[in-house]
Image 1 (cartoon, rainbow, N blue to C red):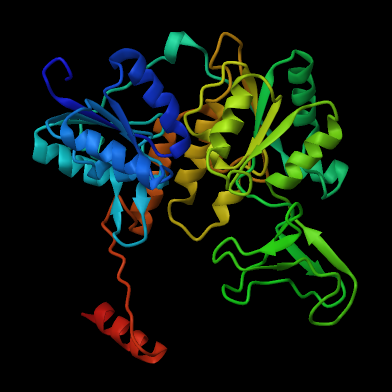
Image 2 (cartoon, rainbow, N blue to C red):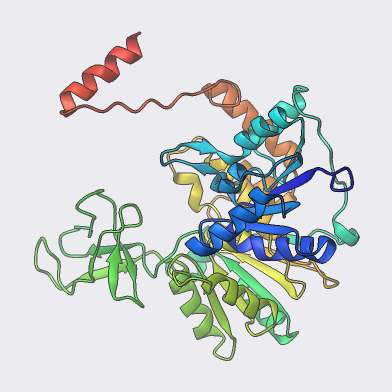
Length: 423
């Protein structure tokens, strides 16, 4: 495309992925590469935008908002990890970066490539029905073998060791062997914080958000209990607000506690954590990933951020804690997102010359999303998930429209919503 005088737009789902992608293009094409994402300062964004507008740039690398950059003569748009939910913006203006890229490419007469090891069901469905052309890479880069995946049934683990187990015996053994070989590991838990609830053993009351009516998550380092929906926070209480009893118990766990547990089991291990609590400072995630890539950390604990497109050749082990955590969400894509997350994070192991393995802890080892992810069998998952979607009349079998009704009173909003339903 560049040889033909046309320009390229590369979209990635996370800001943390832009430096490596931009560096790869700069190595090949020099300084005519620009970056666009929301973490740039106002001055940086201005400079990059005007370089693009003046025609000084041939390649733009960015997140979803990069699809709106004033790049002319676009010949190719690549949407990397097209399945990723980060491409969708729910706030106004509402749009899906992948879908805007398709429309923009059509208008410009450009080629659009939707890339993913775990395509969205909608994209795969479109390919199966001839709307898209499907291209399949049968082998990993340099013919690296896929990671060997082991499933740990945590029901058996709890029965033998008690309900407070965080790291299974299999995962502890695998971590020990990895550290002994001076290799690296990634441990995924897609829930941040230290404990997921504060419960009173005397009256049964749970500490909840006054705005959202959900359990507050304890963040030990900050000394706060926080709502992950509206960001309300309060100090962690010593006594129950309802009965004044002192018998409060912290239940569940998040990445903060997993980090502490690994540090307790392996005191000499250098452990880092990647989640929203540790990357608030500008540039923090890039610094942390750079330290891990340089071998300054042995284990990286994190939420779904650690599963996305990172290439660490010394990582030979991936551990997944509570692999089924997303299956309980009220979302018809829950199984799809679980499958994608497990497949993607398992793919972080064994990307270099060393073989990789993954240990997946779950209470539901027979759920088709987990079973197919551990076998890395996308086609089988697609068949099972599409059957479920068709039976329940969910996309891509049908199209859904989200209608938001606003009114001065709840009664008026409900009445208007009812009118729309009956229309």
